[in-house]
Image 1: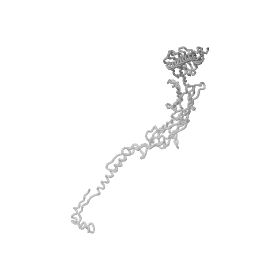
Image 2 (image 1 turned 120 degrees about the vertical axis):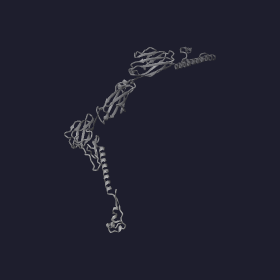
Image 3 (image 1 turned 45 degrees about the vertical axis):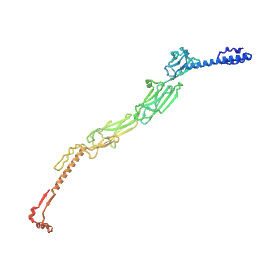
Image 4 (image 1 turned 120 degrees about the horizontal axis):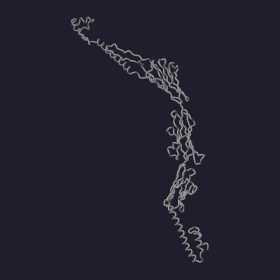
Length: 475
């Protein structure tokens, strides 16, 4: 029967096995024939099943023994990517490399694909290594390393293409800003993959961005455009400082290239003047006949202009006015407050100096005493005030502060006073000593009963004869 013609189906296949079991029931008439046929076919089928299972186990052992591995690749656009298909314990099975479209790039050491950018780097029984030059975004995807075993083994290598951003640009909403105002900077880095990150620097100080935005590049679906904004409130200390927009990206590792991926803009800050008035001459007190020179220093942007004035009065006609004020032959009519005012387009400010002219220096004659011992005070070449003297100008308050009194003068005055007091004590002591004494007399008994002093003396014991016995002692 044709049904027994199982040779039409390969031995060991599933359809053949099914037909083998069907033919056992109808091969021979009679019970004995059926019994013999059933036993033989049963043994045959068991043998077939054993062969199939054994072959599958052998294939699993072979697949485990032949490990196919590869690695993912990151490459910068325009550079070279290398794909390596490696086999452990290969039994001379064929290795081939397929692109993401399942086209064969290399079959063993033969390149069927007509793309000269693919070049064979190494071929052996354990490795197939292929390079891809001038990589672009279209080369991204999963590349397949395939080992021709039964069943075939596959391993996938993903190529990721990094695209560095273009040179960043930086813009500001104001070219010139006044002190205390805010300025907004915008930095843009376009055409990168993945999206770049932006950092801000003011001088050497890192600043935190105010806002940031990432969006797809309309020119290329896989690329990104990044925008970052920085808002600063500026002061005069910020004038001339660079504001730097620095772009970081994994595709950029070279230091020189990193320097190219930054943009700078310098702050131009204008501010009103700061003014200070100092006295250049004279160094000590301002006295009659001296020459006074006041120096006015103003710092501002733009460069300020200076003017001098005298509060509540006119500046003397003989004064020389430039950035400094020079006043010769001082006299007391020059006393007053002199103001230096500075102004520019941003604002104005001023500083005051209070002038007080002292008397010209004089010589004080040395004082003497009328006692037997005299002393002379050293000649004083300067007339001084008994209380305070003005000091250097206080630029913040615009007034003069008293100086300390000359200690030499004070010491001389105290010495004179002490010496005068000692002399006075000596004179008084001698005076009281000359008018003080002790008298010793012998008066008669009963003198207390005399009518008067003369009678008492006459009636005294010894009378006049004893008058020469009276003694007087002077101390």
